[in-house]
Length: 123
Image 1 (cartoon, rainbow, N blue to C red):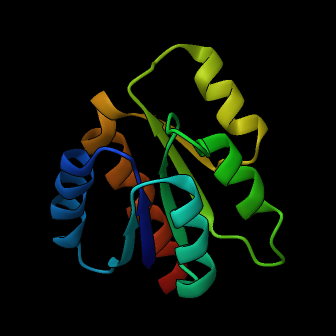
Image 2: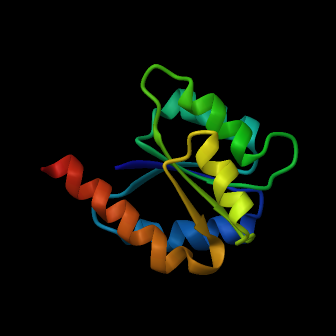
Image 3: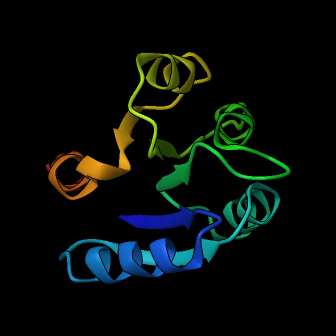
């Protein structure tokens, strides 16, 4: 799986990178600090999956997701947020995110989602 991380918090982005780089079957092809940079990298790198933060300045996660999902062959999008209120999940799914994960539960919820995708690609 070729994965792109888009999050405006450098420390969180680095921690997520460290967590995911140890997973067999995941190649982190890039990281972006905002939505515009993330879309540019996604167009260049063609990831299978994008993990994007909901709240970012300039272009937020829903805006990024809406644009990615308009592509002829869109990547899977896992949107994440510190906000756990249902309206965040509902908005993420409404713009086309394949999953919504709270950052508090990221380790518990993201890994199984990615593992399922890796398994689906192998089988």
